[in-house]
Amino acid sequence: MQLTLSKFLYLASWCVRYYLVIGTLIEENEMSSVTSLNLTLYQDDVTVYRLNKETQLPPDIFTLKWFTISKTLDEVSIILPSQCGFVIGDKMTKAEPGWRVIKIEAVLDFGLVGTLASIVTPLKEEAIPVFVVSTYDTDYILIKSEHVEKAKKAIIKSTGYAFTLSDTSLV
Image 1: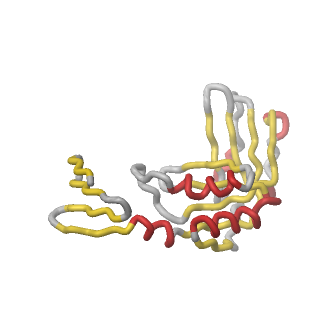
Image 2: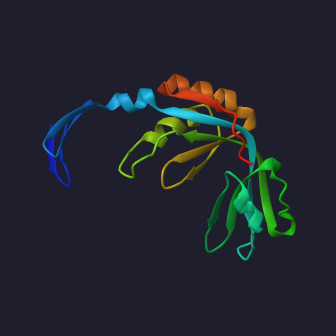
């Protein structure tokens, strides 16, 4: 057993954690979050684009229900639903179509360790490529469309996480 003093009093043993928070002792089985985590698979395909770093994005992109943009010193990467109809055209330097989006249906605290690894490790073992997008609240795992069924089986077998097929469009 290890005793560590930080923001909260934390007393840990192998499979059970005890938290003393404002005078209340709470027991949390580490496996409880593992067996109850839900994943949502969206039906829409998405495309990952690499754009020139000077690219100005069309303002209509911001009307989509789901998209993600990352800008670095070297590039702009944007992920859009494949059927959204925006013309990226000459701004695009590369495109990788045919991805499906899996959302972790939980707000993932920054202190959590291993949640994403528990999902991508069985995919690695099955040689399934992934592309991960993290937001403030949660993570999204992108899987190539041709690997979705194999990926679902691998994740369920390894983790027991539940999948829901979303009928919500990302467009």
